[in-house]
Length: 128
Image 1 (tube, rainbow, N blue to C red):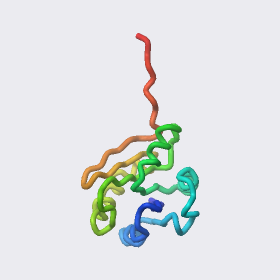
Image 2 (cartoon, rainbow, N blue to C red):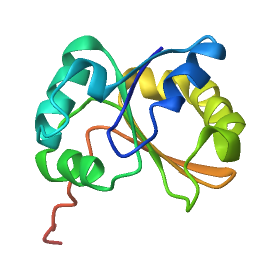
Image 3 (tube, one colour):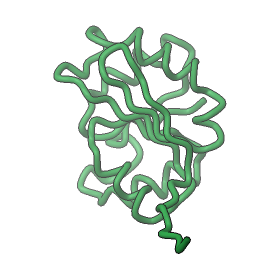
Image 4 (spheres, helix red, strand yellow):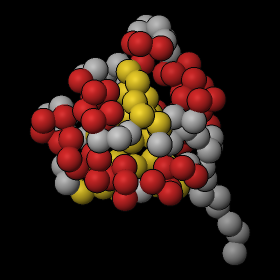
């Protein structure tokens, strides 16, 4: 499992995740901090990384494009730091390893998580 930590999360996540045996890199170490979200997503998809973010834009891009990756781990909390929720993030990564490997959006709200398998398909209106 490889995790790309988005710019909107602290670089301290990298050392925390590595300490848990999870390969991790912060976007500022591998890409342009001013890059568009699509560039970060393309880099993650090509390298087989899960994007770890505090930003809703990544899920919106996947939903509107119907793309099957990269997988997104999205945290929705007021304190997105390792000392506040690190154990929960590691637990969620391990619990949903298979889904994230295949392509998914996993949203973490505190201690709960939701999974949405990719690609996200829009509902079609049927005539019945």
